[in-house]
Image (cartoon, rainbow, N blue to C red; front, side):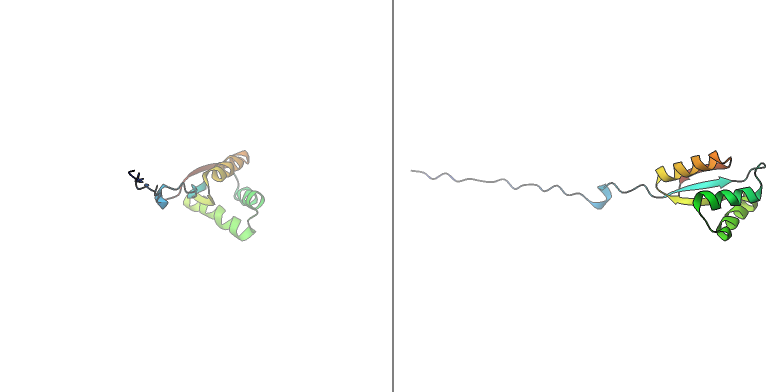
Length: 101
């Protein structure tokens, strides 16, 4: 009686490179732009109140807004930056968010 031989085809393993793994979308920033409406003391107060930044950091960011025309006030995932921009707009500041370079 002939013996049956089983032949197994090689199994291809699925290889997933790290590039294909979904990485968190982290490099986003919230920017506050200079405007002719808000006082410097108010902008400082907003940074201290919303972000809980110490006065020295809040004043430095406010001066960047005033002198350079803009300041990056926070960075993180897109959803958080969108939330920060909307909150700052609620305070009456001109704020946007964008992908960090």
